[in-house]
Image 1 (cartoon, rainbow, N blue to C red):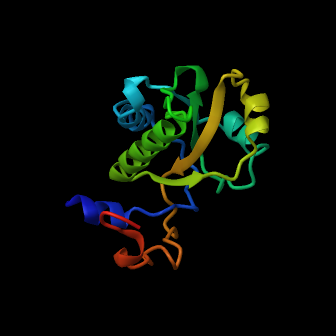
Image 2 (cartoon, rainbow, N blue to C red; image 1 turned 45 degrees about the vertical axis):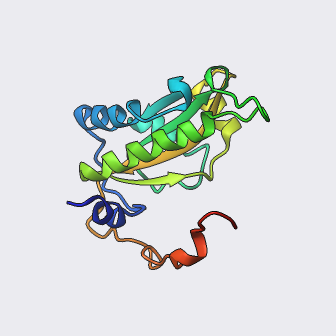
Image 3 (cartoon, rainbow, N blue to C red; image 1 turned 120 degrees about the vertical axis):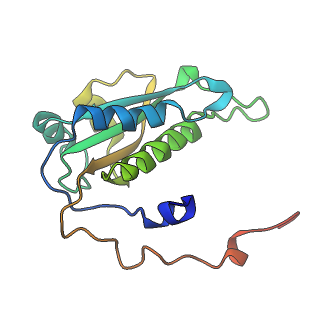
Length: 172
């Protein structure tokens, strides 16, 4: 399949069956995140895998946007391991964690696993519930699992702005 077709067919799954993911599937998803590029290859990402009923129950204390997914991965970054831009002190770690998340989301899709990138969660609650070290910043939450037979993209899934509105050459 060509990449553009593959990427456009992926959608945010919000309805899952109840089966937890098999370890070999989790390993492949994590491997895709592991090879993602990061600033100066510092690899500040830290990924918490939540694939048990107990872990998912704790997750539900941290977000209302869990989609009753049987599995989730919380992508954090270690602030102390981030590359820092000298001009303004900006950290690459939030971007790095986003790239890692995207790699994992696309790998999940290639394996028939649905996912939804969740930003609506309480980071402080995540830190408390999962004993996250203070220098790790919860950045993105991927809820995932096998799509329910009734799962389908939201109505606006394939709507995009015209490229002329978002692409510029040489100057804005």
